[in-house]
Length: 91
Image (tube, rainbow, N blue to C red; front, side, top):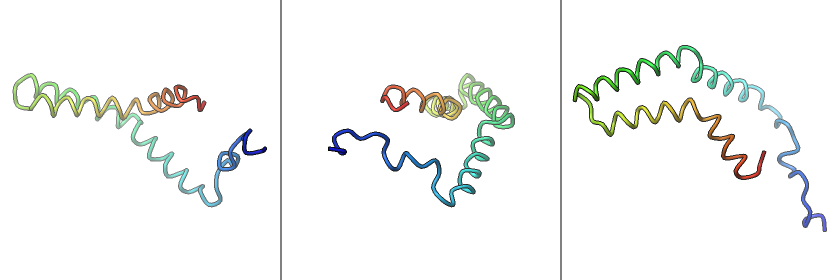
């Protein structure tokens, strides 16, 4: 009867598994690096350079579009995951 009405799954009940502190800290550092001020400045310069090269005919439009879409996905990853979770009803 308990299996028919599952509450919180056992894997979701624990906050963090034992020994995951350094991993969580490393992933937090990576996220801060990828989304920080330096990364934002580099991304702005990359999009400007790719856009200029596309307009002058020195770069294929398809490759330029993939670079620009990649920047949008990188900086929008948090919003994308939140949208998927809310659509799936997980949060």
